[in-house]
Length: 163
Ligand SMILES: [Zn+2]
Image (cartoon, rainbow, N blue to C red):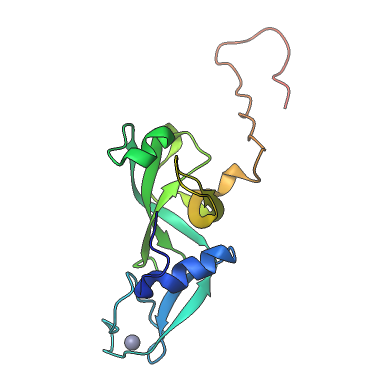
């Protein structure tokens, strides 16, 4: 489980509990600073403000975890860990899980959006809300996008494929 009281990332988890995605932003130069650090790499400023971002981004990289090494995650495998580049500043890349999609459908720069899920690990109390990302096309929970009917090549007789 994440350590919610760890000061540098506390604002991240506080925001997640409100179902918001927040990233520290330098008060002096407006640069997003991620991973949280005491000084802005841009201007050296030390005043950061947790800033809510859109939750939109693109998939930078990902990995399918078929066998989790960390015991409480074993029941969740297979799952996809990924790096999401935020729309506000693609240099800001959040480590997350990619959910609600077939790993085979993932591709570089795929538009994704944040979704909040309660973490529940075997043997642990639930109640921690974590930001995950899913493809923008995945739409709302419980709704599975229907595959688009494709005209069959070579099918010269019969009906038009219904749309
Ligand atoms: Zn700065």
